[in-house]
Length: 75
Image (tube, rainbow, N blue to C red):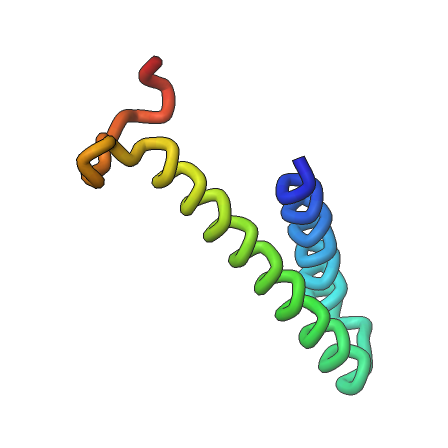
């Protein structure tokens, strides 16, 4: 699933950015660049999660337009 791969990749890059920023070893300019890259990765993660949420809602939507809520582990 492409969304999962892009989410996982973006999340890993975001975690790497956080690690770099927390290390305290970057210059102010480098920190700003890493921060900006992290913001882009966070946005990719957010959009991926929104897409997944929409798909789940569509799967749970009933014929009358209402939504049936079920726990994720309920089969």
